[in-house]
Length: 468
Image (cartoon, rainbow, N blue to C red; front, top):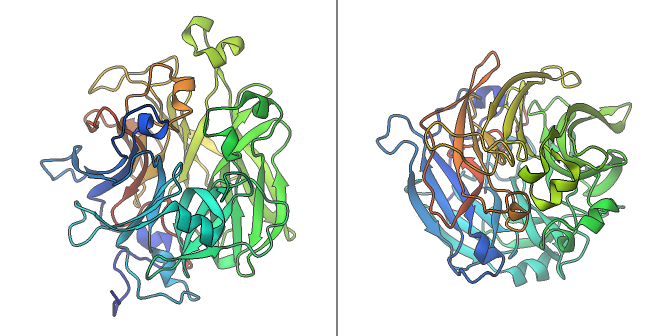
């Protein structure tokens, strides 16, 4: 529905967004791993609604569950139809509102459009885009990241229509959610895909690399891993001309280059990306990308080592190494670009770094929960498994929500007993430091595992800004 004024949840700058009202609701994508893996359980994935308003009697509880009409989608990431990027000077759609959640199936390639109005606690499915339509119109499958752009809705895809390579980007129309087609005009050497984001005020896009669908959907392919066939590059794009401009290799031994977190300040041209695994020592790394003399470069700025462990404490895949890799699988950057949050899914740790100087991060906080060996307990329920995985930061930077499931086919490799899904909350001190909330621990249905979180009104990975 057209608006005469911009949506009140849109902000021209990240500084103004940090003053937004506190979130009251969190939306959580939850998948049924048995349905995803075809193990006989036909209950569908769901979008969970969690009350995060401390004034509410239902604070910290799941207050709604929206079951999807199909089983086996494997919900993973999702996003809003519109956000603060609609205020960019180049935006042709200032009338749009933040109303619809674009929820995609990583395994099914199906797209669900959920309307969060009139009651944000009771979103309704209003449109389903079938996988065949995605494949026919865009030539892609295995949908992943969703970003609300100034002109259209952008989705990344890991694979081609036939489940091979290349993966890439496709666009949805802002108004009717029709699949417009493939985004790339000239993809250059890019074939692997995963995340994407941009330096929107500089007309520069960035994409990362996980792996080919055949190396992911049945679990970790060790032969492909040792042959370094998972991703290890970043790709930079001319956003306006939709052309590849440069690939940057993170270096020999690095595998699975995942989450992209560009500086929110649109005058800056740097960002952070996590490399999940170094084959030489099982460590994880954080790299900063930056532009120098017109050329894009990367520099490793954080290295998190594997932790020693006894062989009998480890799942079969790790026994030969006698160590737990940190497995940094997600990162998130506060809206003031000051704190970077790093999820160590393997060792069960959420770290906070002060990245005011992006080339010299300082560790300022840490909480431990779960982990392959440690199984660090939560104060409310005792020992838990899984570890901090998807992490989302409130707009004011004070609350850090995180969940514990990675991917249906990969969870049992590192947690063979099966992950029991959870969501936790850490409070961030404005001067640095993290404290685990001892009471916030929503109870989820046993058959569901949570993944990405989106906060009502926006969060630290949903919006892009065109003004500093």
